[in-house]
Length: 471
Image 1 (cartoon, rainbow, N blue to C red):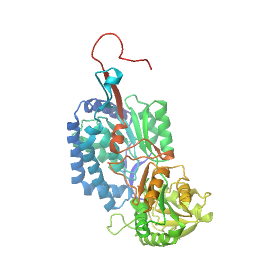
Image 2 (image 1 turned 90 degrees about the vertical axis):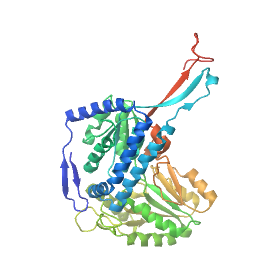
Image 3 (image 1 turned 30 degrees about the horizontal axis):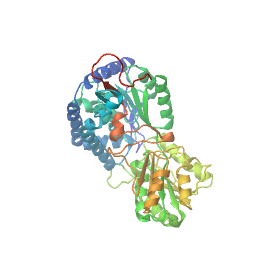
Image 4 (image 1 turned 90 degrees about the horizontal axis):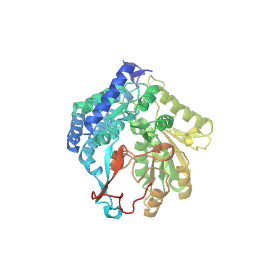
């Protein structure tokens, strides 16, 4: 397996890295167990101080970290800097709120014959995080910040094309003051994930990635009876109804589709537009997509850089070719540029049918599918016509319609009149083939905790409590 930084702009290998030996992996697992034992004995105040120091380091080192991410996976430098800032903010959020999120949950002690009764959260142990390259810092921090604040240790198996970012993260938490072993990067290939998950010292796993990778990790974890949280991407709908601010919807749609060079799980991918405003939206959307500048991701004037991997570009190009060959119509883009690197232009495809791959599959690049519908019911039917269910956008100024979309769209997140994004304050995750479990918010920090029921009696002899019975 190759662990290497490859410049997506040129296809050149910039730096290669050795995979861990079995002995090195065993040592890392030993450190994780010891780090967890130490971390679980610290206070929220200790962990908050260290997590705030992580945020400080990110802010001080923002420019260099952003440049490193841009080099490895070609997100624009401006978006990379925004990603670093978002990570710092999430660290501060959990430093401030973790103790409240994990406070004891009191029960009605009197009704169950106790003098005191409550639920108390305890950390589970070392957690394996299998993370993707598209947001190489944010995907990791949104797991690590809550997990470490809860007292868990983290083990990161990062994507093989962002090794420098992975190694930066390996040192970040230690430099901030966390105990040795509390967070480590494992420089291993995916074929060794089972070895890690099978180890009794590792108690759970979280994965952000493809549906296939999620099925594999969940299957392995299931064999060893270990909890998983999975975020497996989506084919998010972006519905525009007659009452919408169409100009604003088209503007946001362009960003929503092409953010991160179109490589975002929660990017809008299927644009479902009511026939009354279809032409107006299509004209504005295509004009904006056509005007985006494809270029050097380090250049401030660039809107869209190259795709991160050669394989990813090939997949996007094939999905578009398949649609056009089966009768879809290109409104812009669709041609692979004749230049080194893994470039693909902003593209809009319409007249899609269920026989085409991109009708329901996720397209991980700056390619939008545009659909015309005649009614609210048809809009919901098309929106829900995929096995995915991560995020969804609905554009309407009708209050009743807004609430109907919230109820009817099959998704883990619904954003009305705004672009789907992730916030520490809101739970993040999907339904269907987009996975299960939640990251971020209070729900995210509780995912890798044991909620232990506590019943305390008065200490009198005889019996197990008033009205008690066995399970």
